[in-house]
Length: 79
Image (cartoon, rainbow, N blue to C red; front, side, top):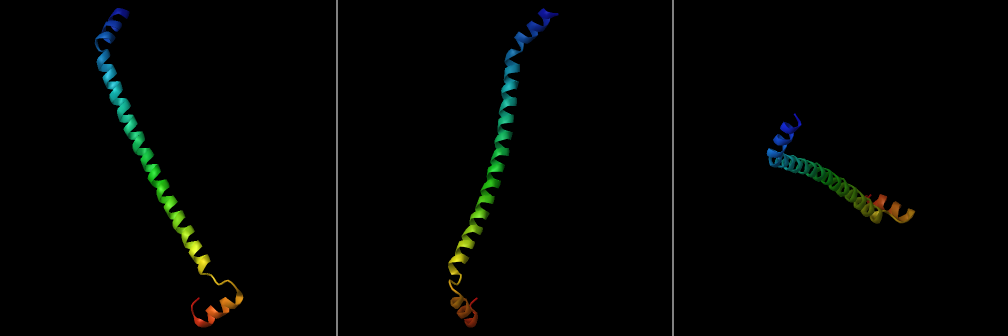
């Protein structure tokens, strides 16, 4: 029994190694695609956060500095 198994294994060793390499390649491609999807998601989130932060900074720059500035803007209708 053992000799039959070892002779089969030795004759088919190259096929087994080939199929193992194919399986490893497919697994690495699938894992790479999954990781690139996560990276794209992170990039989109970072882009949205940056846009919101920039909008907040612009709004802070355009805000009236004193109460008198606020009153003036309200009277002019620019607020």
